[in-house]
Image 1: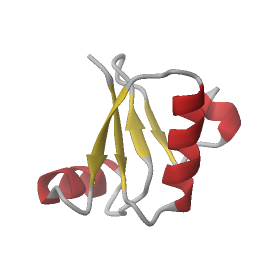
Image 2: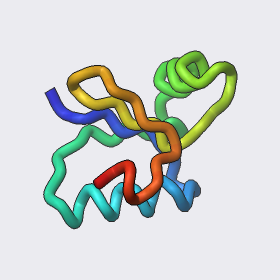
Image 3: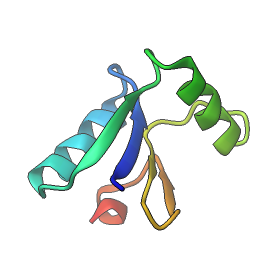
Length: 73
């Protein structure tokens, strides 16, 4: 099971987080909230009614929302 990465193409935090993961060879499934309405509704539900991106879910169930570089490391 890979990391699930929920984001949008216009989100600068998403671009930054994806760059960090890519630089470290971390495999993840990118889920575009612009293209997947069900995923967007799931993210809003997970984040107390907010469309917070990126929302990253790890296989162990840990969730990071708008993580800093240190949190991703």
